[in-house]
Each structure stands twice: as C-alpha cells, then as structure tokens.
Length: 115
Image 1 (cartoon, rainbow, N blue to C red):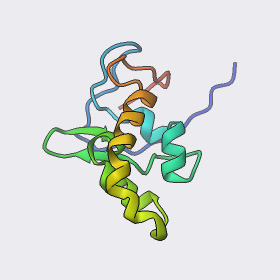
Image 2 (cartoon, helix red, strand yellow; image 1 turned 180 degrees about the vertical axis):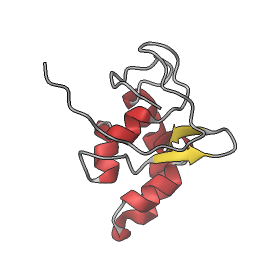
Image 3 (cartoon, rainbow, N blue to C red; image 1 turned 90 degrees about the vertical axis):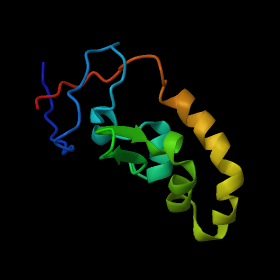
C-alpha cells in the first residue's frame, strides 16, 4: 500500500485533529488539505487550502467562511460584475455550506495529522 504524504501549514494554536466521527473542533486539517466541492467553486481550485477557510484568532479555531462570513467570501469569489449579488446570495451560501460541509455530523477527514 502506498501512502502519499502532504504537508499542510496550520496555525500553531489550532487544536489537534479529532478522531473520525468525533465532533469538529475547528482544527482545519480537512480544509487546509483540499477544498470541499463548494470550496472548489469558491476557490476556483481543486487542490491546496480552501480560500473560504477562516482563522478565528479569538477562538483559536478554523471556520468555514461560507458559513461565518458569507458576504466576504462572496466578495472574493464573485467576478466584479456580479458582486452586487453578494448580499442577496449570502443567506443561500450559508445554508448550502452547512449542508456541504456536513456541519454537526462529526469529523469525516481520514487524513492523519502529526502536529
């Protein structure tokens, strides 16, 4: 069996990755490794850290910006001619993001993290 090694850079104060199916603790490993399908659309890339990922220093955790800061994420993701749609689209983005990241269902990231 061949294992591929990937190095991700995360904030030193970020919590350690929880075990599979344990509650999300905002470690950020999954989103730093690669964007989810929604993140691919927002980031316009398939590999590397998701551009919608946000470090919340006051809580020392990562959060999905599509959930916590949808207007800011849309401002960066939308082409200039569509940015007027930012405000009306932000509630829909939040609802979609909560479903796509499976918020509240536990960690589904199978990557091993060695802090």
